[in-house]
Amino acid sequence: MNFIKKIGLSNLLILLLCASIILLSEYLFLTGEKLHGIFIGLWAPTLLGVIIYLKLIKYERK
Image 1 (cartoon, rainbow, N blue to C red):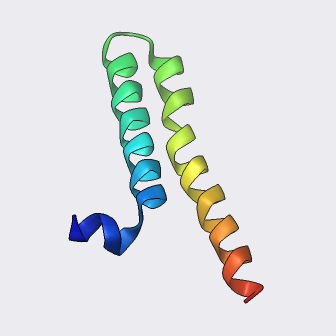
Image 2 (cartoon, one colour):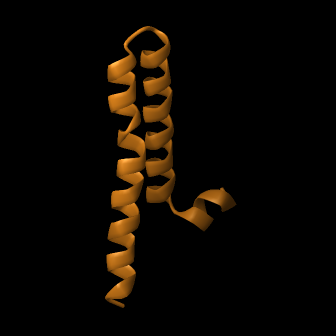
């Protein structure tokens, strides 16, 4: 519970979403859908980059 308070619920949900995207990507890649696995695997760093950018904008305005 202390961990959730420390990083925040929204950040925890985003991390879980990125982890599930990575697992799905690995599953697709290992089952033979290599291009689909690579395409979906690129979503996680893109999502994290967008979230970091939005947080930087938020803190810059303060």
